[in-house]
Length: 300
Image 1 (tube, rainbow, N blue to C red):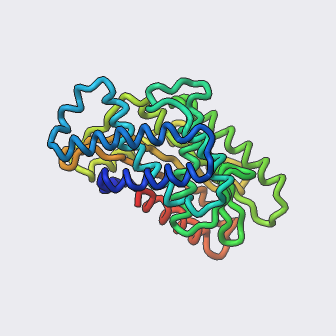
Image 2: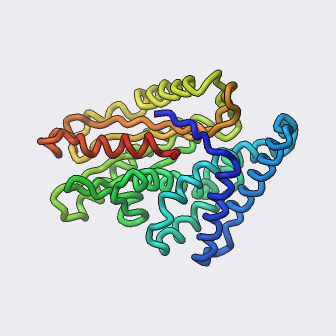
């Protein structure tokens, strides 16, 4: 499900300015400096595009920040459209955390400087689900909770700092989900692990280079390789309430036919026996459809 957003920079700038105004109205502590810095960089890129001088940006010392500003702006625009009508207090709390951290991922370290983009992943997924029509609770008992088809579907989101941290994070998320089950008296409680492998595949310095947008589908191979290495034992789990693993990659990509884009790719590996047990009539198809609809339209 590779997505290549075709939004113009000017349109994204307008979205981010509206987001900035909304967050300011919530009296977000330490005004959203990172968001405003992103807007400023995006304006520089748009000016260069209009003047036909985009190639000159490659020689600038802040070129990495310019690239990440261009692609992460797409992510924040999508988040804004998915949460602008959500509970203001929750939005304020989550965005206060999401806007922390350095201007681009290459400057992240393994300490709390990566917290902002970790929270951003939660918001990205939650916003995509809400835009698809799902009833989603953000930042409550779990990172996300989807109320769908008579079930509480808990989602624990992880963003490993390296490839070798994927298995550990999947295991940690499973443990957290089982804790959610034990504390929720609802008759049907399920769990989905969501793993952002963006940092594991691209520490922040890489550019995904392809000839055309269709070539971005090769991200599927990267995700499937990681799943085979670190998550394929999911089908051997005893707890059938754990229904699967979702992976997400978000990275800059240079497409020869259209230039710099934000490549966003999702893969879902659902545990078929779990779906059959928990949704014996429909085999979980409505939930599958909801997830696919949300993720295919995640960059709309």
